[in-house]
Length: 91
Image (tube, rainbow, N blue to C red; front, side, top):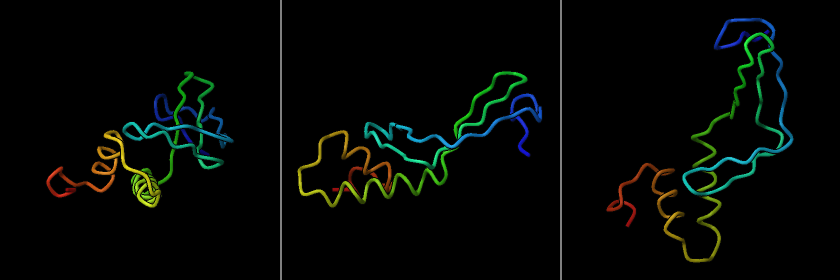
């Protein structure tokens, strides 16, 4: 049983969302059947749990790198962020 992170109550509901869009520094990624929403009936707190967000960013960067089209400025910034590189290192 999960406790509410805000009030500590046991009156929480967990649900896996069928689809969830996340903005990763300008790149929109749709996650399917892997994001959990936790809602507390006692205090009304809602939280979203995304497993391995760092791995997700790196995977999205790799997938975009395999598309044979020129990167936009937003995509370059996202790739640098995902790979933890400076502009000089990325160039």
